[in-house]
Structure formats: C-alpha cells, structure tokens
Length: 425
Ligand SMILES: [Zn+2]
Image (cartoon, rainbow, N blue to C red; front, side, top):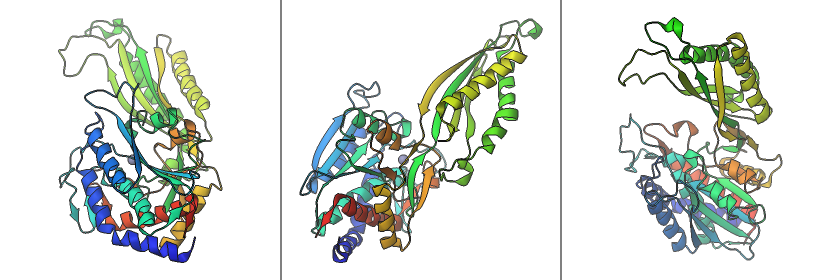
C-alpha cells in the first residue's frame, strides 16, 4: 500500500468529517431503545439507504425464528457489501444500533443529537452509533480516494447487543451470513478508546439461587423457617469466603479497568416472601430468590466457576439442616480472546502508528460484546473491538462521542481495512 494512497484516504476522511458527524446525529435521533427494541426497522433502513447510496449491495435480515422478533418490535439487521477485484479476503465491520434506555440525569435531549464543543451528545452516540458512522466513512473514503480493494468489505448494523445479541450478530452467525468460510476478519467499532485494541472479554455466569423455608404465622416465627434468613446465610458466606478468593485471582488477559482483572460477583437482585408494597399478611417467608452476576476469568473456565458456587451452597446447607435451595443457570457467556499474532490486531496496530504515532494498547473488556458470537458461533477468531469513544461514558447520562475521536477512529479503521482487504493503487 503506497504512502500516497494512505494520504489520499486520510484526506478524504478529514474532508468528510462534517458528513460523519451528521450521519452520527441522524442515527442518534432514531430512538432504538432496548428493551424493548424500538424503531429498529427505521434505523436499519437509515443505515441500509446510506450504504446503498454509496454503491454497497444491501441485504436486510429479519431475525425469523427468534421469539423477540415480533410484529410490534421487529428485529431487522442490515448488511452492506462492497466487492473488490475478488471476493476474498472479506473484512466485516459490525456495529449494533440498539441503545440502552436514556435513564435519568440528562442535561440534554438524549435523542436530539446535539453537537457542542466538538462533542456529539445523545444516548448511543458513543455506544455505538459513532462507531457505525466510522465504519461507513472508512469504507466510503477508500472509494472516494479511488482505491480498489482486492477483497470485499462488509458493514453490518445489528440489533440487541445490549440484551445479548441473539437476534443480531448471533442470528447472522447461526444463519451463515457470518462464518469461518465466508468471513476472514471482523472489527467491531465499540467505544474502547481510539488508542486501544480490544481483544476479548471475561466470561459471564448469571445464575439464580432459590431458598425455600416453611410458612408460619408472623407472630410465631419460631414455628417456621424463613427463606430470607437462609438467603442471608448464603450471602454472608459468599461475602466471607468467596469474595476474598475471587479478588485474589488475576487474569493474564489485559482487562480494563485493572480492577476488573479479577473475578467478580454482583447480586443483581433479590426478592423474598411477600411483596413489600403489596397487601401485608403476617407470614414467615417461604421462598427467597436472588440473581447473581459472576464474571469469570479465562483461566477459571465455566465448569470450575459453577462448581465453586454449588460447593458453597452445599456447605451452607450442611451447616443448616432445614435449608433447601435450588441453583439455576440463567446465562453463560464464555470468555473470548483474539489469538496472539492475529492479522487484524497487527493491521490496526500499524494503522494506529500511522495515525497517532504510536501503537495500540491491547485491552480486554470487563463486560461482553458481540465478539463472543463471532468467535463461538461463526468460528471467526480474527475479531477485535476498535472504535471511537470512551467506554466509561457508555450507558451514562449525557453520553457523548468527541468528533476528534470519530475522525481518528475512521482513519485507523480505513487503513486497517486497506491492509486486510488488500488495497490496490
Ligand atoms: Zn456497545
């Protein structure tokens, strides 16, 4: 790839900065709130029309067969393809267009797409509609610079990442639209800082513990056994024994922030006995239910993670003969890690050297994102997240993406695509 070609692409991206900002604002103004999955079709069409307008071949994929794909809230994904001289290699740029609800605390219209002091504000501006704009303008700038690619580049806008991605990237992978045979490299422009390349994430184990007691009159609690007291014993044992163990385990994967390099456990919710605001009757609680979010390390693995929880529950039950419990898996996401020496990491690193004068720091995400489906269902190992925006601002009030970040990430993605798809001229 010649320096002249690179310079032409970079110049096209700088010239298109206002267009990239405008496209991001247009996307933010479509309130694709998930749950429940509002306005997905409008957003898919907005992206699809933009891609088609620049000559990409556009396909729409409704997530047929998924229970969340309903007439009221259709799950529509869009994929655009630009073929080069040949079909392969294929570089796929994927962005989810669903956003979490706005929530409280905003000082601006969360769906207004306001721009001020070089920042584009709005729910989803950073996570990750600016990323979708960056993917599009990276590909468009290559075309405007008159550069032909040896292989193809695809841009997808997908649904439901915030709720697991099953009707989005997972659906495309299950139906072969993303696959090891078809797809060589995937870049997901999630907001993980413009100078970092994200090579995977920790694992997730969501589980529910149900404790059972025996109902009795609330005036004579000694005649019953309280399921809430039993849950209290479980929580206490977790705090005393499990949490210190988890905090002492560290992964070699470069998860950020560094505090997330350890295994963690959160109690997502708890509910026991009768509803606090319901009609009250004097009863000892016969059930208590709590949902837990255990983030596990690549080195721990899922089987050991679950066995450790089961052993802890057994130990509590052994101490308290009348304690009965049930453990139910709600969701399991295995950790993923892009292989060392992956060409997609090398290409982004070289692009970062060119654009920022330094290589990218390799990081991993404390949460999960659609890389799990790309790696585990599609079977494409060469996948990373790289895109504009600051991770900490995702899901916050007054979320924004800096215009400078948008332009920088667009350049980096464009140069990486040229290298991976073989830019000619
Ligand atoms: Zn995201």
